[in-house]
Image 1 (cartoon, rainbow, N blue to C red):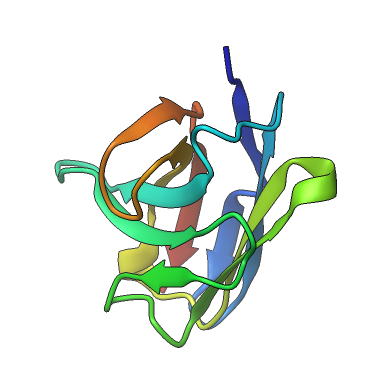
Image 2: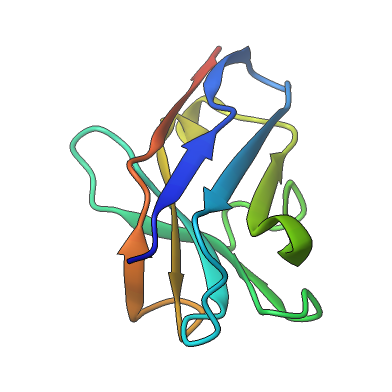
Amino acid sequence: QVQLVESGGGLVQAGGSLRLSCASSIRTFTNPIMGWFRQAPGKEREFVAAIGWSGANTDYADSVKGRFTVSRDNAKNTVFLQMNSLKPEDTAVYYCACGRLFRTGYSYWGQGTQVTVSS
């Protein structure tokens, strides 16, 4: 069983930065894609970013492209989401997940970490 634990959320002013981390309990070769999703109050969960096993392949939602960067450290079973130029509309609970595809088909999910961006 894979356990994912997010950290790094918090309150930040618009224009600020946060770095989220997601630690996996084990290295999972069958679910090599690590992704970030978010869910704002009253909205459906949406895809944010994902990264392949080697780190060479990444995918971003249009709304965060150019502002967010996803990376991973396989030696530490950890994936990161660097969020810059944050906007109030980025406020949400952020979840990490691992799976086999970049935008769908995720098998394991973390509990989420709250990100609040004040205007």
